[in-house]
Image (cartoon, rainbow, N blue to C red):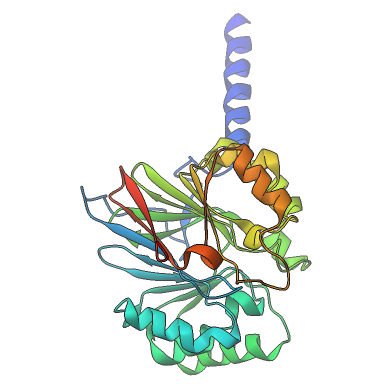
Length: 303
């Protein structure tokens, strides 16, 4: 009887651990974005990885370069298409291995047309949420006409960025996309990991969804650097969520004297209270992070 009781206790503890972990640390639960079992290329000592938040006005666009791949997360707004192309060419970008659109608002999707037209894009990912606006329709039409592989990206999926760099998706779920709802909250939220370095990418995810992600993933959210949700808006950056992320620095993409007054003072106060170093494109220009997986440095364009 005692043996049976002990066995039941062990089973209950294991079940609780699985629930607590979500799908984060369980290899057999994880999968690559193509549906295959999750694998990541081995990290190579001292290989440099560069993450650059481009100064693209009020929109978001972040360029990631590993030793073997070029990744672009979001593309800024329609009126910044020419500037985006100029900035990418300045970075000597000719091919984009992975284009990730966090959600189909114009300030994240607007430059996709120029990127797809002017660069050799090998793969496109987004959250699968559709809209009826012309920007989105043109984006999907171009993907189809150029026969670029396209994949919906959802929670528990992984993307291999090469050179030991992985990108793990925490949100949204298939059910959340199926239910529709707020485009911002359905943003792709994912964590880039390179050895001891990590960065959480957040799109425009709002506080209500942050609470859901926090409840599901807890301390798995902990990241060296945070990409500020929703340009530093007061509608994002829930305090408990920020505490779990526990980042050393936060990067904010926002336009000079923007109409939304981003970043909001209440959000800036949270970042300051948590002793995060703050970088923002409206003051610092493009912001570059260089890391070898162990250490990192942040460089501002306007120094």
